[in-house]
Amino acid sequence: MNPNVDTNEDAHGSSDAAEAAISKRPRILGQDLQGQREIDMADASVTNSSLTLTERFISSHSPGDGISHDQTVRHDESMDSLSDRFANMPALPGAGRREDEYILVRQTGPHSFIATAKGNLESLPTKDEFNKFCRLYRDGAGNYYPPPLAFERIDIPDSVSADLHGLQPEERNSSRFRYKQDVWNHAHAQMGITGTSIFYEQAENVERDRNNKPKPEFRYVETIYGRREIQKCYKHPFQAGSLLPDIMIKTPQNDVRFAYRLSTGDDFTGKTFSEFERSIKNLYGQDTEIKLKSKSGIMHDSKYLEAWEPGSADIRFAEFAGENRAHNRQLPLATVNMGGQDGGFDRHVSVKFLFEGAPDSPWAKALKKGELWDRVQVLTRDGNRYMSPSRLQYSDPEHFGQLMDAAGLPKSMGQQSHAPSIKFEHFAANGVILAAIGPELRDIRDIPATELRNLSEKNVLIADRNEKNQRTGTYTIAAEYERKMMKLPDDAAQVLGKPANIYSRNFVRPESAARPIHDSRRTFGSRARHTVNGL
Image 1 (tube, one colour):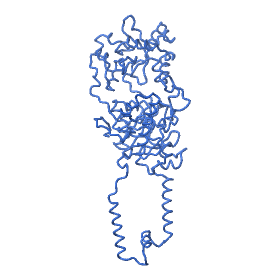
Image 2 (cartoon, helix red, strand yellow):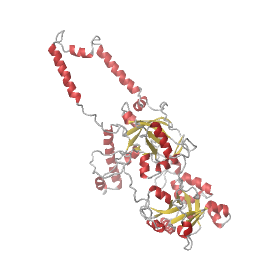
Image 3 (cartoon, helix red, strand yellow):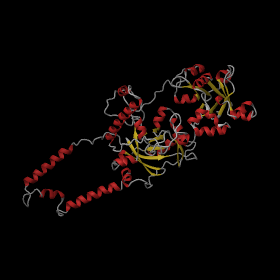
């Protein structure tokens, strides 16, 4: 793990003015300004090099060669009046705003970056310079958003949405965009940012699937620290935040550094985020903030992640290096349901166990031909959930390919699917609760009471339901429900004999005190909020 910042590298491909604007020691702009002051002073001293500026000002208003006592008194009174006038100068416009409300990131090489918080800028960048940087905007919980995601998060009041409801979709979308753009422009004017490009444009020649997501071959960017998944392919990936490293560190002095993890091994391989956090805070101070990048490009504050889902900062930290935090590492990679026939209970058997124990059986031969695909479940990358081959192929094609090779199953299974009505009927017929016992996942109703006593949340898998209360065909380990403090589906709670809110009863989702870009002209009604970082 290398937490150091590439602060000593020279800029490549950026103008001197842009470099000076973001550097804490601006070489070009600072020298130009200083040089101009020296020229002005030289010109002023040409008139009378033997006199100071104050003396020349007085002598130029004297009718004779001398200065009277009355004139001196009047001058002193005038200076006192000026001093009194400026004694109670008002604060600068925007003086109450945060010194870290935005961060400017400059790319100094293909994979190196320098970042400066607003309060540490010694020169205000020009409009063009603002648009050359990657601008990160802080929300009320300490998360930082690149331009397209900050724009996306702009809130549209219910009153405005109601006015737009009756419009045609195209006109409604256009009106929503214009409203957001107005909020965007006003917010930037208040922050003093003249470069307002949003950088939401998508890259051309990117192939998309039926859900308008980039196809698998377009979902990743290659970096020196490994392959990183992205959610969108932007025309300007740097300004849109797609190329930033995994971790951003902001010290109490608002100095900003970047760090990244290596899948080939680094100083924190096998260690937790808490160990990394302790090391960073011992180095930079206990009030140092650590941000972990999401696939969308948001730099999420670690405290916010933990407030949202306990343990999620550690999970994301591990994912950067290709590690996972599976609750049960003994779960099989793939299973096939050999039960569930003629009213019998489901019995999912490990495919590896089947291939090794009965390689010439009809079940093994059918699987190798690509049959029985609708009875197969495969384990997700995090090791905590099972889903159908087609769903895993769509959501995580890289992991799907690796898993199918390891399990000895044909990848063609990922291209198979039933009609929606058949699919949901199939899901509804599956067991509500599965228990992991050895190489099998069995319907919990088919397990003797003596064996049930030895089960824990790490051995129990729950059939998930969506917002419409429909079965999704996925199973999630109960320990993950517990970690995320999720409500159990009612049918699962009934089978387990537990309250549906056993894990969720005391959890309140945190809410940002303010969005990264918001309309300060509006009057917001006061309401109780659960925020983090004391903001």
